[in-house]
Length: 131
Image (cartoon, rainbow, N blue to C red):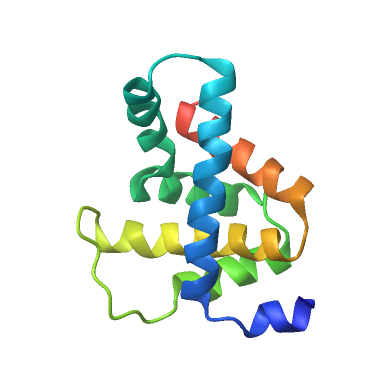
């Protein structure tokens, strides 16, 4: 896909992909750094992949200037997108922020910017861990 094609995609579609990409990155980190049972791994992953965790990380990255202008523009476009879906287990504001974060990750994945994708995911994990 070209960058132009990726930018034409619905932000909800980008978030759908970004959610899966972030989940895999987090699971890989947990399995390689703290081997153990699947139940413990799932419990650990939820801290990072929940709307609350993603929103916390996204807000901190925006506030600190960690994201580039283009990345912030993609994040805000998705965050501000009007959606008819309602979050089941999350605060609606956190859900929108998390959706923006996931859309950014989906965009970076499709744009084949894997190094930057991993940098942002690692920063998100660091923020959620409180480091």
